[in-house]
Length: 105
Image (tube, rainbow, N blue to C red; front, side, top):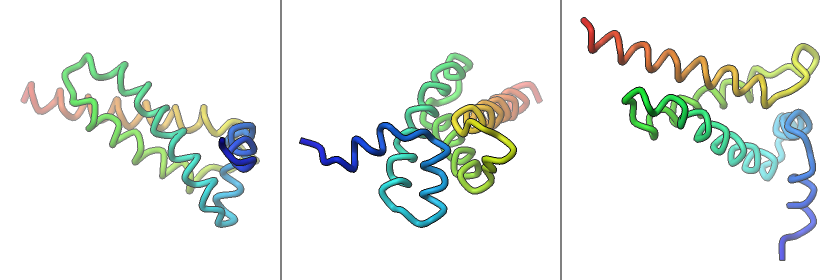
């Protein structure tokens, strides 16, 4: 079975995990990346209908996710997941807009 460390990380909220990542905890970073990938995949499904490759959308979402890991400030935003989701949606929308602009020019 899974160790107690996994139960601990599953129960923790994202803001606590971000703080652990900043202190250098590798397991927290791995767990947060897995959460980010799932979030990026969910958001990418919404944009995939517009003719952009799903893997490309997930890649853009993860690029934004890593940006969020570095820039998140718990004093200004209380929920990391919402903060990351906003940036992922923004990045994916920009990608779609750039691709659509290429098609029409």
